[in-house]
Amino acid sequence: MSATEVANASLEAAAGNFGMHLEVQIIPVSDVDRARQFYRRLDWPLDADAAPLDGLRIVQFTPPPGSAASVTFGTGLTTAAPGSAEGGLVVSDIEAAHGDLTGGGTDASEIWYGPPFPPEARQPGPDPERTSYGSFFSVADPDGNTWLVQEVTARLPGRIGAAATAFASTADLASALRRAGPPTPSTTSAPGGRTCSTTPARTRTGPPVTPPAWRPSRPGRPCPRDRFSGAATGATCPRLNGVLGERRPTRLPKHSKPTHETHSKGETSWRSQARPRW
Image (cartoon, rainbow, N blue to C red; front, side, top):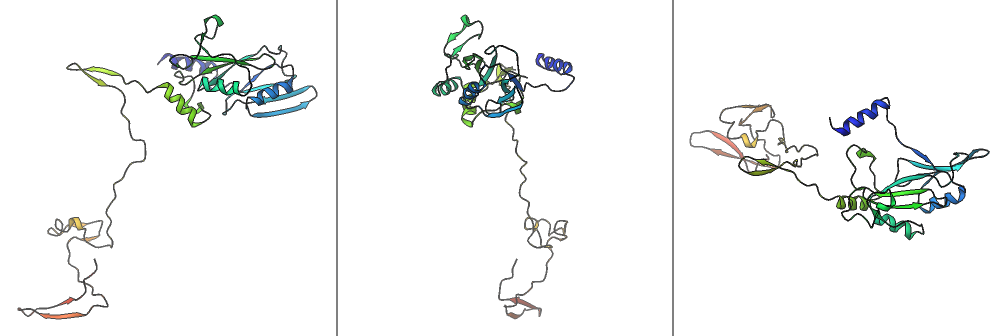
């Protein structure tokens, strides 16, 4: 069992074998309407804005596209000081996200790479190798609540399920795959000094391909491919439910006129002027 599997098993045991997911983060704000306008300017979908009781107002936004966690603020929700919250956001392209925010009029810090803390360790610009989890910038709402934006193109093993991974568009997904790069094939030494690739071969995942089966046009007809092999032995074909090669009298079409022939031995036969149908 790997270290990741051990850690996941320990978490499941501590949680009583049921899942725990972060759904809501409450942030303190001093002006609810001002904060509401700020997050609307970020193009975050508004989930709710309700005041069920006097002195209680709940405003909730969920970052797109379909984030697993929502951001909630309002009146009567928390006693924390406005502007004291910090959170993290994940994007697939740090430069595109930074340009979109600043182009829409939102103040954001410059992009940096390296450790996010302490600030003295940050290096200007995105990560030169565009390593996943390596590039950042920050943005703050009007009250000073800070969001740390991080570029993630490939998740660490066991950190998130495949079904929970989402991108805003196919272009974002394609861009993330390009930056992640192709998988590096691993090699092992083989006898004789040769190297063999251990990269698993691609396998077909579609439905099985069934070759077309020959079916007779009419029951009881001899199979064309067995006409010469089975006719001599009189083998029975269960598919045709008859004897292969058995001669059957020719049925004359109604429009044909029979002709009479007499052979040298005195035998009489009938032949049609029209060619029989097979």
